[in-house]
Amino acid sequence: MSDIFHEVDEEVRREQLKKLWARWGNYIVALVVLIVAGVAAWRGYEYYVAQKAAQAGAEFEAAVQLSEAGKRVEAEAAFTKIGNEAPAGYRGLARLRAAAELAHRDPKAAVAAYDTISADSSLGIALQDLAGLRAAMLLVDISPFTEIQRRLEVLAQGGRTFRHTAREILALSAWKANDAAAARRYVDMITADSESPAGTRARAEVISALIASGGNS
Image (tube, rainbow, N blue to C red; front, side):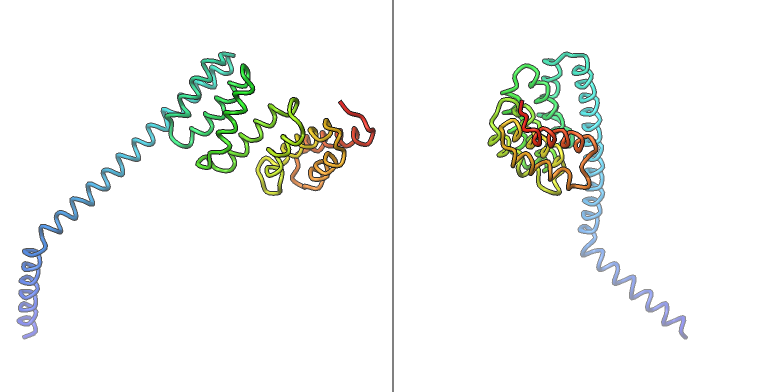
């Protein structure tokens, strides 16, 4: 008897499924097609991104080789092209390298290029800080301490990636400006930071000795 009821239940379920398919079948097929098409499109996009990244990597390496060969103008042009066209991961690095090549022939223009990079929040704080640091390094021998301080004071704060170098440049600039108190403050920041590199500490000790002796460049 139970077999009869089971067969009836199966028949009822089949009829219900037929009705559901008749009503919704086309929509289900369309949904499946959309899912398959979406997955295919995403896979295609991933492949495209991978190909672009590989191309950018090859172009970046070629530009580095131009730089190492002393072909500054060609290297600058190659890095600039990558900075304008490559995926995001390469654009910021290429722009920094283009500015570095430019610095060999036109330091003033390179500072402007670094400043543009430093102001571009899309690149991330680390690359922005590095650009700001590079600009200050070009200016430290020709600009007043107040200008270097304006550029690097924030970068010298705790937690910033390039704080050690920023503090060293600030200490040097302050010493050159005969501002012993400011120079001492940045030297103390270097010595108090347990993460300061050994080389930075050694150079800070030299500046500290110069301050103590009252000497100046």
